[in-house]
Length: 417
Image (cartoon, rainbow, N blue to C red):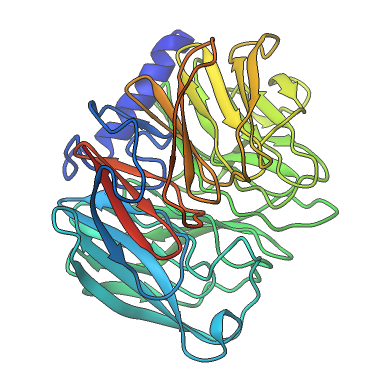
C-alpha cells in the first residue's frame, strides 16, 4: 500500500466510524469527522461581522471552552456554572444542547459537581469537546467525570472515579474506537491512558505512560489511524508520543522528546507521516513514520522543525502542504513530505489557540480575540478576508449544513450566508 492510499484509508476509516449515525453534514467530534479539521461543505461565508451573515446568536450559561459538535440537528457543548466564588470555587458541570436551525437552548443539565480546582487562565473547567455516535453523546470533564448521554441529555452511565491531578484543568477530548472510549489522563504524576466500555463506562484497560524526568502533564486528544488493517491510537504526552493498540492497550511504538510537556495540539496524518507538536516550553514539530515497533526515536522521525511551532492550535494538511499557526500568530505553509521548503510565513494578529479548519480550498484561522483570518490553502499566500465577532474565544469551529458554529465568551454564533 502506498502512502497516498494510506492517507485515503485514514479518511475513509474516519468516516466509516460514524457511518451508521452521521450524515455528511455532521461535525461529531473535535476537528470534525476526519479528526483533522477538514470539511466537504461548499458555499460557506467568506466574510462576516457581528451583524453580517449572522443567522442567530444564543447566550450560553456558565463558562466553557469545549468546542461545539453538530449531530442530528443538534449542537452539543459543555459548561461549568460557578456555585460560589466564581471560577475559583465549586462548579456545576453541565451539558448544553442547542437546536441547529433555531438556536434554541433545549438542554442545560448538570451531570457532575466539582469542588475547588486549579486551571490555567487560558483554560476553563469545561474544555473537553463532546463526541457523538450511534444516538449517544459522550462528555468528559477530566478527573471530575465522564458520561454517556442520549440525544435528549438523559444519562446512560456516568463515572467519576478516575483520579489524577490535571494541573491546569481538564483539556483533552476522548476518541471512540469500536466499543471503546479512550482518553489520556496525563496529570502531575503517574500519567496513564485509559479505555472505557462505551456501553457501560466500565474500565477495559489502563496503560501507564513511559517514565521520564520533568513535568508529566499534557492535554492532547488522540488520533485514530488504521494502517494496513492495524488500528492505532496515537496520543502525545509529556516527553513522549506513543501509539496504542486499542483493544488491550499495548504500546506499539514511541518517540521521545525529553522536556516537552503540556502538549495540546491533536496530531494529524497524511501520506505516511504523523505530525505532532512537543508542547511547552519550546515546541518542536516532529514528522513521524507510524510503522515501527518499540522506541523508534532514532529511526522513524522523518524531519523536524523548531521555528514558529504551535503549542495549542493543531495542524492542517491540504494536498502536499502542511499549514499551522503559532501562539503568537505567525502562520506557516511548508512542504509536508520533507519540511525543507517553507512556501510562506506570515504574521496574523493576536494570540492563536484554536485549531484551524479547511473548507472549500480556504483555511480559517481564528485568534483569541474572535478575529478569523481566511487564507487561501495554497503555496502562494493570499489573505482573502478578516472577520471579527468582537468577543474572546478559545474554542474551535464546527462546520455543518453551510454554516460555521463559533463559541465565544458570551455565546454561540451561527454564521451562514
